[in-house]
Image (tube, rainbow, N blue to C red; front, side, top):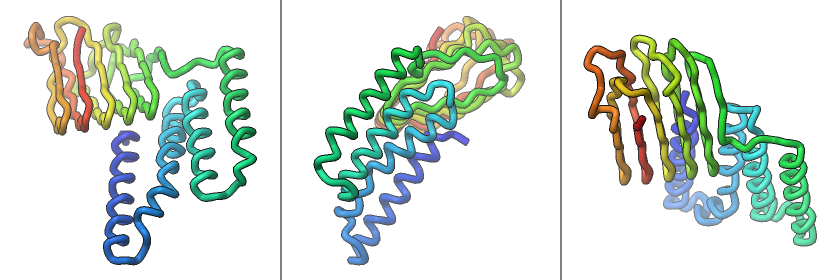
Length: 219
């Protein structure tokens, strides 16, 4: 499952339900949205951690910011607690940096399938698979980069790409055939691999949905 697609779709459905209930005078949709929108930050950081627990610092900060804002919007804590909360978040981030925790900027791998997701941050994945089958790439208010220049394609390899208010970049070796198709809504696809592809080479099929963002395939 593409985590970015699932998160974005769930948020859109939830927003639609709240607006519909507001139109029916069941709830105050404006108050519900202004109170609970930080849940999106918490969910985005949590999903990013699930897909890549080794790179935990960026998701931790996103979740921490979401929790602090949610405590504020729900009036769960008094105003005197905010300096302590923000200070604690900065201390955690500083200790993690000093301890050598890595931001989501590189993740070499040898698995035949990848699942990369970035929310409010960036993520880079490098695959050395000699039988690459595909997987998922997702970005919401962030970016993902997949480097396949040291990989070999398996027959029928395919990628599911979803980017909303962000972008995805895929690097492939010279000669690969790459076919891109899908929905670019207020965004676009750029596939330079089409220009000099070997007609007999294995093909990577990319199905993409891009909303206010872009997908770029290059060498």
